Each structure stands twice: as structure tokens, then as C-alpha cells.
Length: 252
Length: 350
Picture (cartoon, chains in turn red, cyan):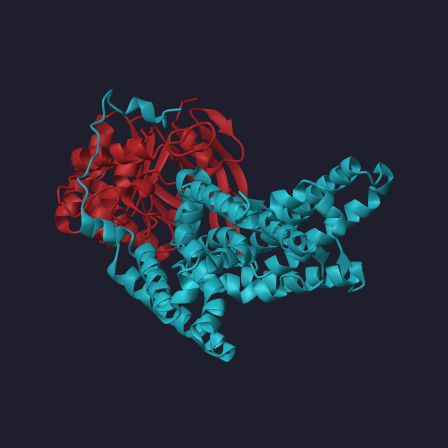
């Protein structure tokens, strides 16, 4: 049996009457970028939230590096090396930049007292080195709420980057970004691959996904409708298949 | 295992240092400076209109005697409001803590009635009161978080429930607590430091500093702000928002029970309606201090100043020579103006 970074076996998730996911078998290999595409309501976000430990599956099993993991929670998933850039960005807009960078895992001593000095220093370093914030108006003490869409996305991405992860999940990262910002993002995803890590890339825009992914998984109405290696399939062919899936619910 | 920060951090991270900038300082602290401005303006008005009263130390000693009775509770209440919740049950918690206190005192009569044994019994009673307050706070928080009912609704209910419990358990009677005066707890809680400074004021300062540290320098406080700001983000990023909120309610419970002890020790008397007059004053102090009902913003210093504004208006109205009927009008005026000011500052500031 191959050793995957992450593997879901027969995972289902229902919210009351609604069956959001049905018998999903999903894998991410080592140093692989997996594109996840599908229409609205196909279950992409639900699948992601199961991988990040936010939702517990109704049934099915989750494996990390071949080891079965029970009761995956957000902190546990993080410990296992999953970092997420959420569609909703998961920022606290009234709070300062440094608090957002360290949201949920503040640097603190054993008694829980914060190391504010160090968090601000690190935030400043990340701003200059990774986020490309040069404006005088933006400092670690700036409130995130007044940032532009691209800057906010930058915060969410840099946050994922800072806490070195094995699998980076990007949920609709191009939403609300300018063309230039999208290009920067695509470069970033490619750099994940070069760094020997894995990623799950979710996007409405098949062009972005096709550009960066090794393998594309098509999700439809809570089921996996098909999987393709991008090296084996042309973009037009993939698009035709996706339209066909959206209309009929199956590939052939 | 790879989420450890040390791996990514180069050996030396350059210090982030910004030169002091007055405009930035004003912008980032606008809420606190705003309420400080209101505080100083009012003070100036008081001094100008009643110089004899407000230039003598007596009036300030009077404020320091009476304001802490409710101000103590406004401090932890600020934490709950920052977490985008509210607690209306704290006046009942005050009284319920005192019921636990006297129950334990009466039930430990076998220890004896010498000064030493009275001290032990009062000490046990104090522990029982604090424990009761904390448990009631936990219960509030648990109902709110686990059942998912808004805290406004839950605490209206528990406010009645615990007041009702007090009335039933005491049959609605008052009773004296003269015995506490023999113990060192009496001067410790409500005595005078250096012969003039009311101990309740000292406790208020201690609680203010402790909760300020908790809110601004501890992980708990960071999570309180994040939970109140955007609960979904906080949860996605792994903050246990339920636990944070339950702990905030427990803090209000604990401190309210303590306030109950201070209030009844001061007059060495228990009355079952204790605290019911504090509900709106205390909440007003929190909002006056610039804490937003929408959560995510608020300061302890603001609340501290807010309590003294609320606490002084009563006496000041009379000292200035106005009729006491005007007090509520002035309260209302100052509260509404301050809240408008805070909203304006919040939009501009940041």
C-alpha cells in the first residue's frame, strides 16, 4: 500500500437530512498538488473542513501518512502538518495584524502569558520578506479590517506559510483578487511543489487549477465524479468533461 | 510536528521598532483617550461649579468607598461583552453567594464560637460563596454555549431563577452578620488601608490589574477578543470558543460573589435583594467605557473610568446644587453622548 500524506476512505458527511458528502475516497500523495473542482454545493468546502478537522465525518476513516487518525480536530490536524487558507480567510478584522498572524496559536510561555515582543518581530519580518508590504501605513499593529482584499489574502497565506506545513490547503484563494495578485498566488502554489510539499487547491476557475495541479479531482453533488492527471488530459477535454458532469452527474 | 515555529525562524529576527508617533498613538488608543476626555471634562465641570466640595479629599474618599461596590463587577463583565456575550444575572449571583456563605457558616457551628473558630467558619463561608458564584457562571456559560441560546435570554432567566432561589432559601428575610467583625476578613475586605484608603478600592485596583493582564497579556484574553470579533474565524483557526466563553462567565460569577461579600461585609448585614440596583449602573459603565456590544473591542481602563463617572454623578449633582431629580437625566445624557462618541471614534480610528 502506498504511503499517502493524507487519505480519506469512504468518508460521508451529512447535516441532518442533507447528504453533503457520500463515500468519498480521496488521497493526496507526497509532493503532489491536487486540484479540487466542482460546482457550487458540490461539497468542496465540506471536504476541506473534514481534512482540517473542523467537521467530523459522519462515517469513514482518515489516514495521515498511513496512520489512522481518530477524532481529528483543528489543533490535531495542524500538528499533523495541515495548514489552510480559507475561502472566508478566517481573519479577525478588528484585531491587529500580529494577532491575526498568530491567531489560535499565540506564542506564549508555559503559563500562557503572551510573548508579544516576539510575535510583533516575526510579523514585521514576514511583512517585509513575504507579504511585500512596504507601505508605511501598514505595521504589525495595524488593524486587518482596513487592508485590501489582496492584502488580507496575503495575511492568510503568509500565516499558513509561517507555520511550516506538509499539506497546504487553499480554499478558493483567488476570490476577490486582482489579476496581478492571482499571478503572485499561482507562483506561490508552484513554490509549494518546489519545496517538496503537498497542496490541495480549490478554485472555481479551472484555468488556475489546471495550471498548477498534478491531478484534478472533480466533485459533484457530494460524490467524486472523476479524477485526471493533468499531464494526461488537455484543458479543453477537461472542461468538456466538467460541463458534462455538471449537467448529467456522471462522466460518460 | 512540523508546525513548530522554530524551524522557519532564522536565528536572528530583526527587532521591529517604530519611533513613537503621537498621531498613531491617538488613533490606536482613541476609545480610551475619548473616555478619559469625558472623565476630565466632567471633573473640571464639577470643580468649577462646586470648588469647595471637589477640591477637598473627602469627596474622593466617598467615591472610593461607594463606587467599588459595583465597579468590581464591571471589570469581568467587560470581558464577557468583548466576547460578544452579556450577563444580566450577576446581581443575583452576588446574593446567592452570600446565601452559600451563611449556609456554610451556620452548618459549621460545631467548630465553636471563639474568635479563631469564627475565623475558620467565615473563611469556609467565603470559599463557599466564591465557589457558588463560579459554578453559577459555569452553568450560565454552559447553557449558552452547549444549548446555543443567546446569553441575553439565558441570563434574564437565570437572573430570576437565582434571585428566586435566594428568596426561597432565606424566606425573604434579612439577617445581621455582626460576627464577621471579629475576624481579620472584615478589615481585609472592607477596612481602611493606612487609616484612610477603603480596602474595597484596593480590591478594585487589584482586580482591575489582574483582569487587564489576563485580557492583554495572556492567551485567554487573546482568544476572548478573537471570539468576540469573528467566532467563525476563531473556530476555523482552532480557538476553543465555547471554552473561552464559559470561562468568561465563570470569571463574572467568581467576581460577583466576591462583590457580594464586599457589599454585605461593609454593613455586616445580608438582605435578599442585594445587588438588584446595580444591574444597569454596571452595564452602563461597561458601555460608557467604550466596549462595543458587537464584540471584539473594549478596554479595561475604559470601564474603570466609566464606573467612576457613573459613581460620581449622583453625589456631584447634589454637590453642584442641582436637585437630585436631575441625576437620571444627567446619567442618560452622558451615557448617550459617550456611546455616540465611541461609535464615531471607532469608525475613524483604527
